Image (cartoon, rainbow, N blue to C red; front, side):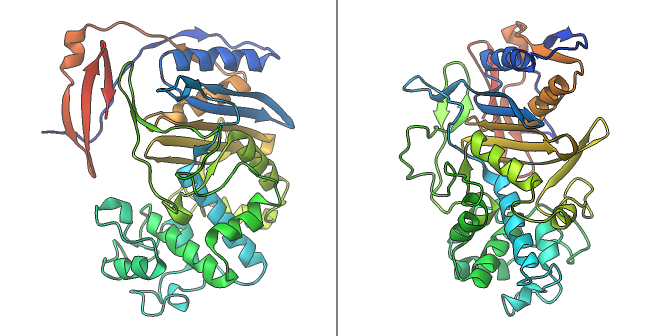
Length: 387
């Protein structure tokens, strides 16, 4: 088995670099770009791009169900996975505004006897600085009940002393979900609906995706090659819970974007804190942080069985790019940046397929041992894919 630290596969070359141009028809430019990505199977899902008070482009691309040849719709429903963390953060800051909680509250206040619980704060959980073991790192997934999950974490040593390191921890967000339930006396799902979905009329969003029977529900795929389109094994609700259980549409996430910026959920003071970097300069309090040409970008991505998502905004210009894909191997961060280039009249490239000798591709076939999983690289119909 081959071991590598990172795999970089060039599936297609990119070309047709557009010189910088001034145009008011951004919708047409984005449509041409997305059509090219769809043709190369580099994007399959739904997209919404907006700036100011105007939606510039909203559409579906590719297939929502390959077996039945059903196309993705602009209002399709997708799992958004870790974008859920921004909702959990929003509820936590709402509870802080209601003086029901503080960032300095200790974990042992809610879970007596929790290892180092007197040193782990709400702030540590939000910023991934708690040192708590991430349950996704192993195969010994606990039951979804609070008692089972807490017992599971009791047996796992901290990765580092609280506040002395940074490591992405879904477990920390599960704990935040349990804390929300303890404070409100309601389920996490009920609280998110009350605090976020209902005020913003996000009627296409929810939690129980697997049993959902809705004409706009998409099918998730883990492999999306020319002839091998393998459906993902779905997970049962509540699935990733407060770390990633929400499903939504690009239209609903646009309502969320507008509600956040209009302070319909939490105050600007709370947002400023949520968008402050922790010990990791690229992560705040439930939000990922970046910049685009000197402008601050607030976003969160998500990914898991069958789906990948990216929810990105530039608050100073009220710009947003929302991408939801039912192909878990999509590179949405790269596409998001290209779409910002379109919005801000920067040069960008439209990808095209460049034939490669099959013999060259077969050199890369095999199994590659990553840090936490094994990935298979194969060739089919003259094209390379990862599984």
